[in-house]
Amino acid sequence: MSQHDCDLLIVGAGILGLAHAWAGVRRGLKVRVFERSHTPLGASIRNFGQALVTGQAPGPMLDLARQSHGLWAELGVAAGLAIKKQGSLVFARTEAEEALLEAFCVGRAQSLGYRTELLRGAALDNLYEGRFAHHRGALHGLDDQQLFSREALPQIIDYLAGQGVEFHFSTLVRDVEPGRAITTAGRFSARHIIVCSGHDYQTLLAEQMAGLKPSVCRLQMLRARLVQPLDLQHAVLTGLSCVHYGAFSDLPEADAINLEIRRDYPQLEEHGIHLLISPTPYGDLIIGDSHDYGVDAGPFNGEDVDELLIGLAEHTLGGRLQLVERWQGVYGARGPAPFSVLPAAEGVTAVLMHTGLGMSVGLGLGERTVAALLGEGEWPTMR
Image (tube, rainbow, N blue to C red; front, side, top):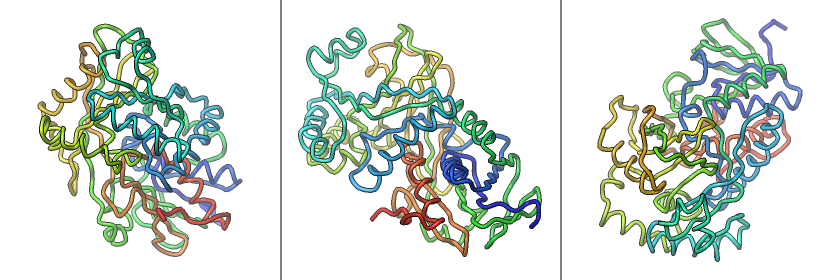
């Protein structure tokens, strides 16, 4: 065999690519990972780092999130990751949002085992010394975790490299075919090839991916500091998120929130805004996001969207913000399901996310896909 042979060749060093690499190396496979940039720069770096169980829709996504929760705990210890495990807080700002969270807690959360608690009254007033007492309630998601992605991914890469995974950065994979990848660093052979190319639907397997009818979602993102410091340790959402996340969005009580948004805040629906906030290890906060869908991610951000995000965040957090950084998030979106596992050719498989939930379900998806490749389990699907 040539020096380039490996068992598992992965295209893409975002969280999905790294999840598959970890699943492979844990099974004793020889793994190579190819990334076109000098370090991961796509969706996995630009995101909130929230690994949420609470918001996942019943069924395969909830199952994957629960499996990923345990895998994050294992990988966190192995790679020395700083994972916040205090959970998430979903704040109810209106009567309709409170009604939805209450209905979720007494219904779906109990019947399907979501680990949550609804904080109201004294429990809410005592949270962070009363900083959130102006809300009607807060759903505490006990199993939700959060990382600082721009530091966590390089740490995972370093850990996997120490376990024997060979990384090829600044290397474009030009083509893949059964048993072989053609790259800017030469030709490499492999028993199995997995393409985790994020929102790039043109470089590899373009014809097969076109059948999924995917699009690209562009997000406006901010990093800011509170003028009055707050040692936030939870991921933060509001009831606005409940009409976007599958654990809540199909409940009858979500209709009233949608009506509120359309009546009172139509610009939020226009720009796809629902507030997410993640604390970083440095005392500042990642804030977003908006959703703009298309074939490509347009380069121009609107100041009106940032102003809406800042206003929502300041109201939710109960304090003024100073901006530190702005950037554009991006991810693959709107395929036939939240994710696709696409057999593209003999020994070639594409694994794609069509939502921004890669941190929440990616480790489980990688584990299941590699297990299926090796005949250890069923292929992951949405059925």
